[in-house]
Length: 624
Ligand code: ADP
Ligand code: MG
Image 1 (tube, protein in one colour):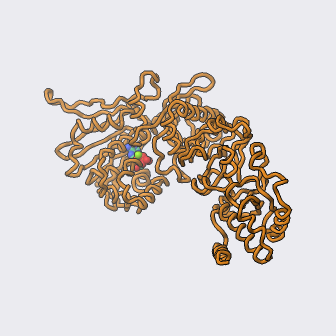
Image 2: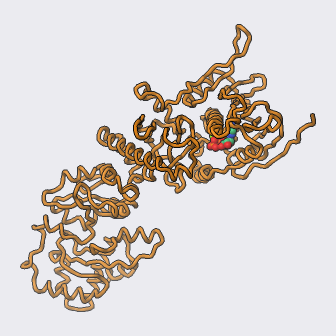
Image 3: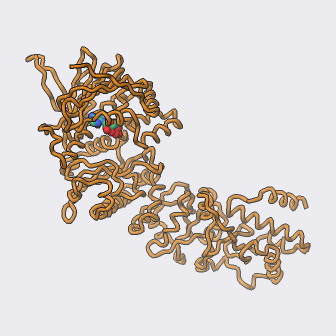
């Protein structure tokens, strides 16, 4: 037999970066490397099971699927082997020498920005196979792809420093055997009790049996001992599962180290048959705001693992939900394409949305503190709901939380239900204002008349709010109304502050005409206001026109926006207005009116196109 040639390869640069991070990592929880290797072994077995549905010969007459762990104390090695799908030479080079997944690349990017959180993120992200270099000086992999001949095996070796080599070898059994040459200071991983402990902590719910090799001192023989439960938790009866088990399973599923906030486990029979186990985390995943974040459920068909991140079953606005779906109705050979064009997918999606929203609804009623934790963490995501899911808009609206004038804190903890039940008897609509910040909303002059009449207004200041309010038309028969828009419904409760005709002098009527002339087409209209108590003037948007906040959203998105023309409303009872009314000098009068308009613009938009001009004009008038 002639000696096989070793081929030497360089790692892709991203892999080098990741390996460097692993080798020098100060991450204290190094034991997760075993979780990662066992999870890969289990994935490989799942893949074999799945592929063999269409080509049974892949089993090579060995269908006793298992993962085996053994140690060699003399050589200080830890060996993890599986009889799963294995890797061809090409697979090994692609899968272990490059990073194909955009998720991992993004993860590396995010590490660059968060140097101080690096170590924490390693565990959360689960950096996969490369984490074995946290504990090893050298890693060797013997592997052979299922269904190939014994001489098509390969040996992959690396010390994690820039290069790896690949050699053709003979391997009788299909699957993968990974040998870790442990670093001197990591010899604890040679202890059986330590390995058992890690497996029961992270891998109890792996559905493949995991065996550990043990030595029987008395008989001087080796034997294999199963060290995990290997039961698919979700298939068990709900009543036989403890909260602890649900929590452990969640951690196993997601790599999250925190307990989930809540979960919902359902066995459904009838027209559709499926099991779903849905969790809501306490904390958002690190990539929840990345465009291509990997959300979605783990999909099983009749207990067989099919794929991760099947996002087809939940809409974007529920992307914080983690968990799994095990369907009896989907075909076993289901692919992404089939999923997307399948009527069953649509029905399951509908059902899972309902389940998710019901889970939230229940918690919002039964455990307000928990719901508030949820809202503070994921409210911004749920606010995408009204735009994305018209069908469930009423349920979603009921789950939204707001702050308001009367709420008196910036925390969003008031439901629309509560708002409606506290409505003033003369009040027809649900009033709201959108602004750049809570303080800007809270201090807006638009609120004056509402405060005076003891009518509450929702204060909205998240960026998405204006967008969301475009889709929220009414709630339980009450229409939503932006208070920075012209609207007649305020007259219903505004008898007292309303200006009566006999209160307006002829001088004032002349004054109004002069203001109109002075401003010309800078404004849409000029009129006396019913809305103000403390401020001299305010700007309103026409009921059919775009609001200021919407215009800001558009221009922030790089779209051109037509110039907004406002209705300029003047408070004839205000002292400053009364004073300006007496000015006869036309130039001086025009200066004052311009100043008033700029004040109103500043208050409405939060900025002025030309602040210097405004300051110069004000200083000039102050000096007089
Ligand atoms: P991930 O599991 O998230 O894909 P890993 O870094 O853990 O990332 O593994 C990289 C790839 O290497 C896997 O996707 C798989 O293709 C391959 N691989 C790793 N371990 C095994 C194994 N035991 N059997 C077959 N393939 C494996
Ligand atoms: Mg992995």
